Every structure is written in structure tokens, then in C-alpha cells.
Length: 378
Image 1 (cartoon, rainbow, N blue to C red):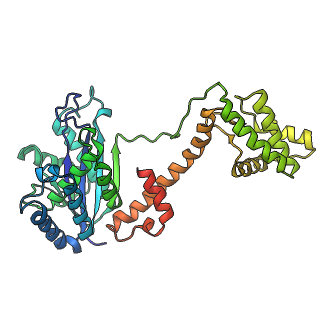
Image 2: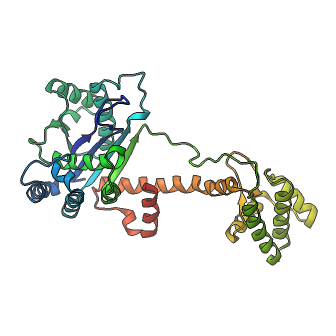
Image 3: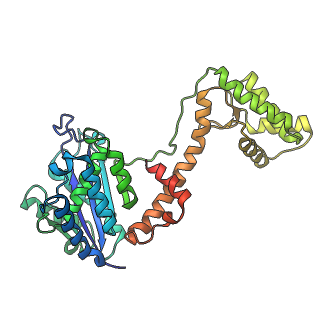
């Protein structure tokens, strides 16, 4: 695997106080990753951006040049993306969700140590031959302390791979500064402008890994509180559609399932009828035994025909929808499967994107799936 060079910078302050004068709610670490074969080109591109947009000066995300005219930032990002093959690593820290009462994160030095360790671990897990150059922080003594701290958490030779530099010694850090500042204008409300969405859309395709802290993945993504009141309009829509399918259905078993669900909707609209109740009713009404597996197939096919048969993650059984919360539960049931599946696809895509530094991106060859994953990111 070809050696890669990684240049990182940050956007934001470490303070956890609600009265942060800059109103920075999300701290951002960003790194640009380029292959060794692209290193010289990266330096040329940085120089060209400096000449073209910054009058030959150092690239700074908070430059008046970028903030005076909103289109300029997008033009800089477009120039960078169009002229250099690279990917971005990103760590977004929601400061409001950090524990403000306990632990040492309220101290600047501890804050930077803790999150640089998390950020660098992403890189260490994906590459074997690399160099990291992070922008310097606080003071010289702390830089040595931070470097030792980071190196102690990894293999013996990590110290040689991890460098703390300023953007004059390592000008490519300036590109990371632009990227961190641009993403800072996506995640921090006080910095959001009417081109924040455009910034995100530019950067997302080349951002191989976006991590959030703290990260918590609930077992169920979409949860709805159930209402106990019938919505007459929705009740009739669902009922009439089921009746239409019942009238046109020839199969006696399927007709019996629809009939039972319709009866239950009328007499006990908020209760989920259990599978054994439905199979017992089918045996009584038709004289035929239907397994639970076959009943599930029937329900699945009815849903494909447009019958809104609701099943809940918190309750067993089935029912026809009678109000808006039932419809939300119906959609949420599938959302709890779809989103994790798309997330797995996104993770797998990022693995190949990261480790090939953008040379192989599977989703670029699968447009329909790519559109779904892009929607998940938004």
C-alpha cells in the first residue's frame, strides 16, 4: 500500500461553558489525506490557491477574503477538489453533550489530548505507512507532552510518524485549516450561512470518514408514542383500501386474513391481534392451517398491495392503522431496518474509499444506492 501523508487542523474552542463568547457548539478536527504520489501536486495546488484567491498569502479559513464574499469559499473548495486527489477525515464533537461537571475535559490540555487520540486512532486503523502533521496547539511544552501522550497509545514507531507543526513549516496544514473551517460552518449554528448546505455537498463525496462524539446508536432509530384516538379520515382511507382489495381477492385464505384485520380494526382499533389469534381464526373460518411463516408472507404481500398493516417494535401482532401515530409506526418499522442497512453500506464504502485514498469508491458505480446513502448523510 502506498504511503500517505495526513495534515490536520481544528475549528473551534475547547471551552465547555454555555457562555462561549464565540458560540461554538461543535469542535471540528479535519485532516486531508494524500498519497505520496500526489504530494508534490498537493503543494502546487496549495500554492495556486494562495496566488489565485489569497494574494499569495497563507491560506486561512477565517480570512476576510473567504468571509467577505460567500462564493469565494465554494470556489476555493471547487479548485481544491477538481485539482487534487485526496480524502478528508472528520471528527465532530458536540460540546453541549459532554459532561461539564465531571472529568478533565473542561481543561484545555486534557480536551485536546483526549480528542486527538480519538481522531488519530481513525487514521492509525486504516493505514500502515503514513505520516501525520497536526497543527500546533497552546505552547511548546504542551506540544511535546501531547506528542508523547499520543505516541504512547500506539505502536513503538508511532512517535516517528506523528508530528506537530505550524502551517508555515508544513504549508499543507493550511488546506486542513480551510477544510476544518468550512465544516465548522456546517455544524455550528452561529456560523451557518445560506451556502452551508453547498459547502457540505461539495465536501461530503470526498469525506471518507465522519465521526461524531459522543456517539450513541440506539437499537431503534425511530420511536413513536402511540395515540389512543381514531383519526376518522385516516381510518377510512386504510379501511376502504383494504375493503377494495378484499373484494378483488380470489384466495380464500388471504380474504380471511383481510376480513379478520378489518373486524379487529372496527371492534378493537388500538389492540394488536396476535399471530396465533389470526391463525386460529383462519383454521376456524376456512378449515385450513396456516403457519406463522406463511402468515408473515401474506401480510408482506398485502403491504405490497397497499394495505397498511401495522406491526410495532414494542408489541407483537398486527393491526390496521387508525390514526397518524399508527402510520408513523408503520413507516418507522421499516426505517429501523433501512437506516442501519444504509449505514453498513456507507461504512463499507468508506473503508475502500479511505484505504485507497479515493481511488476506489464502490458507490460511485452504483448510482441508485449512492443516492440513498447520500440522503442518509443529509
